[in-house]
Length: 326
Image (cartoon, rainbow, N blue to C red; front, top):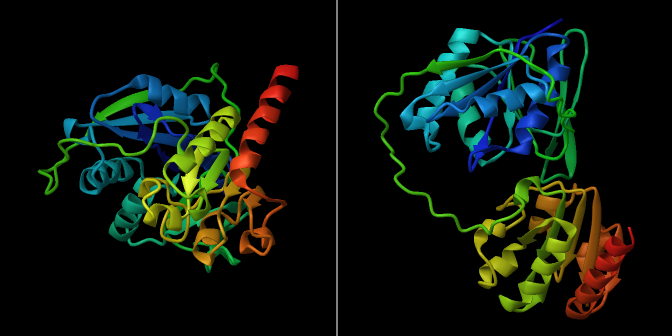
C-alpha cells in the first residue's frame, strides 16, 4: 500500500544534518512507492536546502517560513509543522531521533493523537504494516512495533539506516509556505555553543572517547589528535565530565548522547553500564585500558592493554603512514 510520507528536515549552522537524508531513505521504504515530501521550518527561505532534500530522494520539498523560526523552539516549530501536516495530510511522518526530534515529535504526536515509535534502528516493509525495531533496556534487548491505526510517526537513530546516494540531477517542486506562528512564550535571543568545531558527535562515523583514565583536561589532547587523523569526533564518559576534564556536551551514555558510529575507540574508560548504554551498538569497538579486567573489554571487538598515552601516539603515526602510502 503506497503512502505519502512527510520528512521533517533538521539543519545546523545552515546545513542539513545527515540524519535528514537517512530519514528520507527510511521514508522511501515506508512509502512503498508513494510520495516523499520534505519539510524545512526556517526563518528565511533557502531553496538550496529544499533542493538538497530532493537530491537525496524527496519528490518535492516545502519551506515553512516565518521569522520566528530562525532559531528552534518546540512551540514555534510545532505550530509550523502542524500547519503543513494539515495541508499535506500525510500517511506517515519521519524525523531524526536527535535532541530536536525527541523534543518536537512527542508534541506533534500528542496533538494528532497518534502513536510515536522513537529511536528506530531498523524497519521491515510489509503489505499491510511496517515493522519497526527499536532498542530497549539500554540496548540490552530489542522490540518490534507496528502502528495499526492513524499516522505512522517515527524517529530514526542516526547512523543506522543508510542514506540514498545523492543524485544532483533529480528535480522536484520546491514551494515556500508562509506559516503563522503565534507569540511564543519562549524567545531565544542568543545561542552559545560549547561543543568544539568539527564532526557532529551524534552523527560521527568515528568516535574517540575518553574516561577518567585520561587523568586531566590536557589528557584529552591526544584523543583530539587521533580523532583528527581519523576524521572523527571526541566523546567522553560521565566520569570524565564529572571530573571536569571536558564539557558535558561530550558525554556519551544513558544520561548523555546515544551514538552508533562505525568505529568507537574507548580510551581509559572502565565500561560502566551507564556508559555502555550509549555506545554498545557501535559497529566496531576498540578498547584501550591499563586494567586487563576492565568491563569495557567484555564488549570490545579489539582490546589493547596498556598506557593510552603511549599507545595513542603510536596509533596516530601508523595511521598517518598508512595514509601516505595509500
